[in-house]
Image (cartoon, helix red, strand yellow):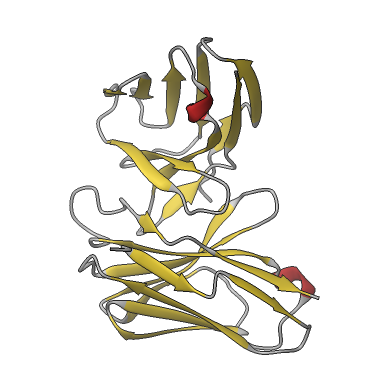
Length: 109
Length: 116
């Protein structure tokens, strides 16, 4: 069974600080995705990383796929209150996505 | 121009009842999914369909029966509802389940089911 562990599960920081969220597994994935979910809404895809070692940037968000394609990280620089939300990583397995349990991020003004 | 829509948004019902949730996507995607998100926000796949054909049934009780009348619709019928069925159910779609980036999924807004 493929599992994804996200850490931390909860993170509350002040506006302007930097943070990193981790997504780890003992399994290899063909690709890995990060989603963001707002309360009362469905997850929205932020990025897909496919190649081991790949780094993608989305404004203040930097996503990295591990060399062995077993783990990923999301780094946010100068966090803003608008970054508040539930961040989910998801690994592409056999015909399906396997989701981590999520990181609930709160950015305090 | 809602990409993936679900109805109803909220569903409150009693144990033992039968209920349905409808999902429609206007993205022209071939693959549709049902997910269950529990109170701890853990999102787990239940079913996937590709062009109206069942691809994945993730050990879901047979009280749950998906139906795909066409590739733009995937409905979920639940018989004999139990307390443990209370959760948020999300419908999603993707271009396909094969090929490059097959799993970039677009989610509906969710249906919050409460069984009392």
